Image (cartoon, rainbow, N blue to C red; front, side, top):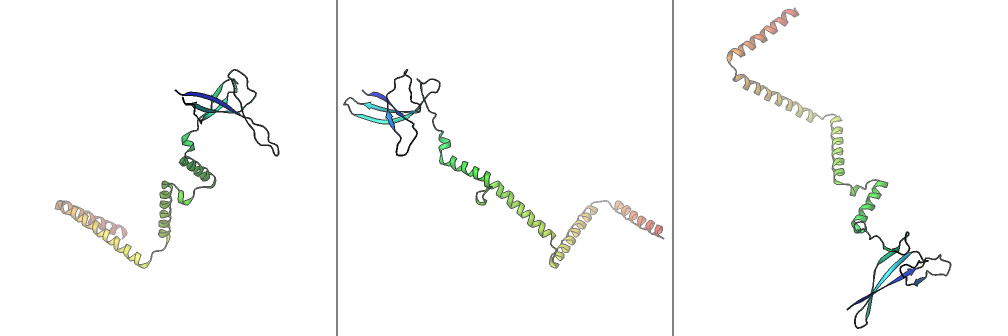
Length: 186
């Protein structure tokens, strides 16, 4: 059979003077009696086993209620998320980036990709504004000739599938148009 005894320790908050240290006065408080001390109360649990040995460990921190001085209320527990190292590092980084701007090696992936795309576009604009070399001009002319030749092949392929009378009619229209323009010019 184990028995539990709770003792309260009052930490007295006094103004410090030179040479004077903070005092700690243990007091036992009974519920219902007004306490002249304000501040924190710490509980100490001591358990006695049947042999009479005692073990003690600190349980938690409690605070006297401002509304009712006879009530002892527990303090809020700390949020484990806010106390985690990852959360603190993230919070510190956010504060730093808000004040100073982003560090180049710590930029988010999306921002790095957008920045690389912007740099690539600027390089393309600079290249388009530079004058072409002789080799580039020759290559461009050959490419245009090839494209025109391919277009002519496509047109010939379409014309082969057409009946002959339509082709003759189109050629007559061309001849007629050229003769009319010649007559008007004279």
